[in-house]
Image 1 (cartoon, helix red, strand yellow):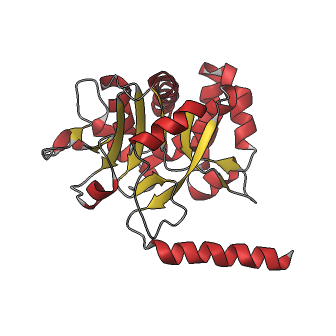
Image 2: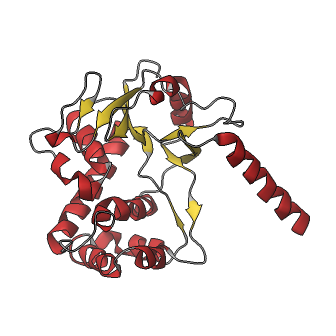
Length: 259
């Protein structure tokens, strides 16, 4: 197990050095949307023949995931962000670092996949939340994609759509077999949806449609393929953690006093 090759890409669209102190050699920074950029030494590039780097404005960090899926054969693969990392620290304001190689291997001895802690969108359902924040018609088109091309996932899609939980940020770490199987399915779905959508009038935020929708799709895949999931806290590397930690404590105390 200790000899496993691990490649966790840290997606970034700019040069970042602060993250270097928070990660070990299991991680490597990747410049996403790099098709028209000079990529600095020490960074991977999501631009390759047959790649989707040029689609980064619409696919966000998924262009990095596509690179890792297609171009890397490491035993364990994963995706995090330069601003968001997995951490299991109980006191994040004391030691703000990403889970390291040893911790990743330990988790994957007992679990199939490492994901962020799921969030509840209640009182909105997953579908309602998307419709209220993005273009409702795109979610309806996604449903048509499942009906037409991926009907064996339709029940899972509808279950997730009317539920309240989801995973955000498109972050994951998993063995190659799981990472690649999920990636193949995800991009098959998104590329089919891409053929049916017209985003020519969208602003730059809403144009990130496939990155937004993929956050809802991970749970669809997991519903169809139940795995043992290790949920790990996600920390924002640019956010001061002590105030965040104290805010969580205050909210928990208020909850206890109300009971």
